[in-house]
Image (tube, rainbow, N blue to C red; front, side):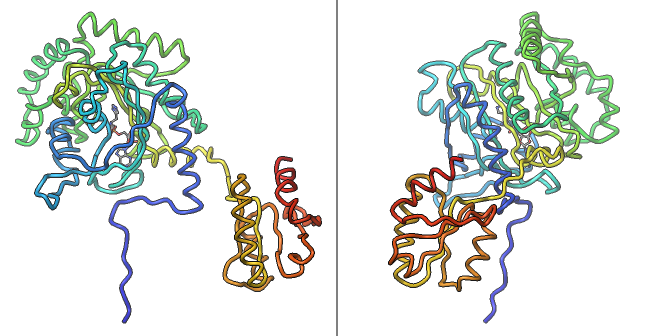
Length: 422
Ligand code: HAM
């Protein structure tokens, strides 16, 4: 009987060797700046109570209304695969009372997120983010720090062609004043039912409508930046001043609308022009009401999510991915049963002191095993057979130039450590 092959689900991106090394490199470069700024890891579930996202992220968003992977678990609970990370962090902060301790709570996370979007280059149904959240402190210097951490991550990748767009959604007072005028502007437009319904929940969404007629219709709409309260305006000016002081270039984009409803105050996006339609490589902002909406106290937070998949595409586009062929330090070829046991013992000892050691398995003939050693890119190779065991010495072959040295087995570790540190 022949079984049919099974394929990966539509729209998922997977990283296999050797490309997985580049993926890992990108993820690490994006995490390092957060660690350097004192953010600590938060490892959270990939599924949560559906209410967390419908309440936290907002019903007017595509993410909640169209893209969630929601299912009923065996206990009849409605569960959703996390489409983003901020709501889960906030849930955990509230549940574990982290907001009763030292503020701001500063955490980073990385992992898979899920959105049932139409798959295309750079847009996947399972994608990876590195994110940070700083919760409990309102200070424009913190806003600037969060942006600087994201920017440092992209700089670590060697990226140069991206741009940073920022805006401010102001405080509640600013948004209320703008909303009145925006809604009255919107009543002059001829909207279909679904769009009108969205506008009622969050009229700012209409700025994000990609249809040309909607873009034209919104061209003269009042902009929130013109409605900032004196405090919000001063805050936004301070963020810009700090960014400038740190040498971080930005454009102010008053029409920027983030895809999630919890944003207030400073919001930002990093855009890479070489990625086509899916040009957002990272984004974030402040969220004043989220904690309260999720049943906690009223504390503000700010954070970002960086798209690891897209950052990798950007690094490939700018040719900044280091060529890093996987290499181990030593490749051991055992000949015969006695040697095999000795090889396992030797390899585990060498690995315990950090020497990366591979073994040729499967009792291959010497010629085939040598080919495998060559392919592995290992820096040194030894053959361990009966005669080597009897003499207590092996020929250590340096693969870069083929030079061999006779080394006593009990001195192999020191010899390798010396040779590898050269
Ligand atoms: P977001 O803008 O929805 O924000 O996502 C952040 C980044 O994730 C995007 O800029 C993009 O690079 C990547 N991304 C999003 N969707 C996809 C997809 N379908 N395929 C590939 N990459 C994708 C958030 O998620 C917020 N939680 C960020 C945040 C944290 N705001 C405050 N704190």
